[in-house]
Each structure stands twice: as C-alpha cells, then as structure tokens.
Length: 135
Image (cartoon, rainbow, N blue to C red):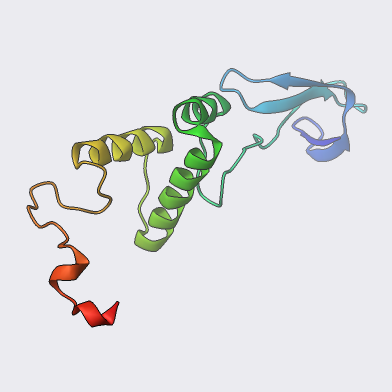
C-alpha cells in the first residue's frame, strides 16, 4: 500500500504494513518507509453500511428495529424515512431515534399515519357520500 513519507516528501510503497484501528473507529495502515525508515501512516475510509441511499443505522440499532418491528416493518420504516429525507431535504442526527419517535407519534395518534394530533375529523363510511347504485 502506498503512503506519503513526510521525511522524503514523496509517496512510497509502505514496508511492514499492518492494519490498525484508530480510537475513533476508523481503519488505518501503519508501516515504515523503505528508503529512510520513518514511520508512515495512512488513514482509510470507514466502511459504512447504508440502508437505501441516506440511512445509516449501526448494526445494533438495525437489529433492535428488527426485533421490534420485524424485517419487513423495519425496511418499510427505513424506506419511509429515506424518502422523507430525500424529498424534504431534511437531515437528522440519529436515524434510529427518528424512527422510534415517528412510531411513538403514530401510536399517540391511534395508528393513523399523517393525521393531525388534534384532528377530530374521521373518514365517513362510504355509504354516506355515495349513492347505493354506484357500488
């Protein structure tokens, strides 16, 4: 693997390269410059598991959601969050907490998605606004 040697001021192939994990969880490679013997260090990109395009729960959070809502329910909720974030341009600090907050809000509304909390309007039965011969 190539890395930049600060002493030689050039990119060189790293000697005795070994993979390490930094304190913040990012992967890195540490080795020695083959020319001058100076320590070399290369930070790599952290592998991320995205669900859809813009949802990033950790593996633990995903498993908690699956335990609570099942596999299909979890994917449905994450897809809804993804579509909402894309269409409205919203950003959340924690997608897991957002899914739980949305579920809690839905339970408070009595299972009616998108209904206003204080709304007393209920859908009337179809018979009240259509003629009997229409159906």
